[in-house]
Image (cartoon, rainbow, N blue to C red):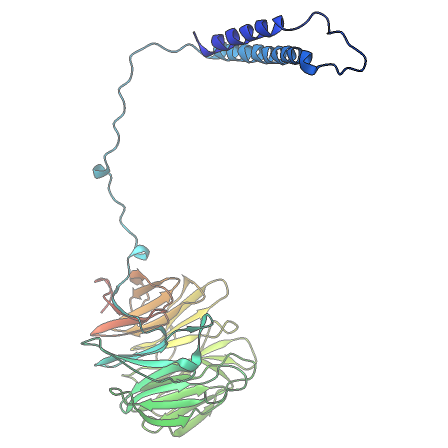
Length: 413
């Protein structure tokens, strides 16, 4: 017996038993005496049973109509079950270069890195040791020296507002300067420290002032016995041992990047005009200050172009609004060698070292051909502020500290 038949039988039996309790006439009523309500219970039960029976009839009819509308099952041999694919037979997809795991083989968690430099013995990093009220405090900026052979860390500081490093023969210069409007107290300094002990050897006032109402951080570049600074609307050549001003040139605009090639002594600057909309890249002879060439580039209204010197010219990175771009220009003429290469975010940054171009952008770092910019490999990386490299190693600085890199073997070197 199926469930429907059982339900009908039970309802029928209940209805019959309840019907025997229903009186044919209502009980007599005596004035002043409350009529008992018990006589209504069988009547209500009968009404409920009638409603249930009607609903059941409709349900049974719907079920029968659906059963009649279904086609009869096809009688035939049962097909054998299809075998489940074995995981061992499914080839694993080859990961794309963008999915490569991190190249960092060792992390030194000194703090959030601001800038980096290196020499044959050590890596140097300016860093914020920790947050204050949810943000790093620039007044607490420290300097770390990391021995490249032992990874031993030496620290010194604080160096308030410091954000620039330049390694020259006489030591390591640290630059600090306000980036907009009126400079704060004790923030306009150049400090020379011993590259081994980190003891202060010299401290001079940073020449120049930031351009009022314009984001114009100080710029610093140096190599061997050359030291250059750009700040506000002026370019300065400084004595690499003392910081004394040797040469000054008015730029008529703001330098947004400064870099010098250690072999050719070519000095390059990204530049945006005080009036106008066209950004430039400018080249000088770093030994004499003679201006050699200039060429238009991008990023004028979006922070200006940044530059990084290369053996045969300069790499330039800049924002366009929708995305970022990089381009390569030749020394002496600043003619275009590669690019503009688009497909990057507005935060794209370029670094040169160890025979490769390094592009830091959108959660990854790429190694690329130094002349064409063609990417060879990429790795996951977040919050990268700086990357330095030479023939003996490569290092990056991010929000956690300094990482020792082991790049993909396909990276140029």
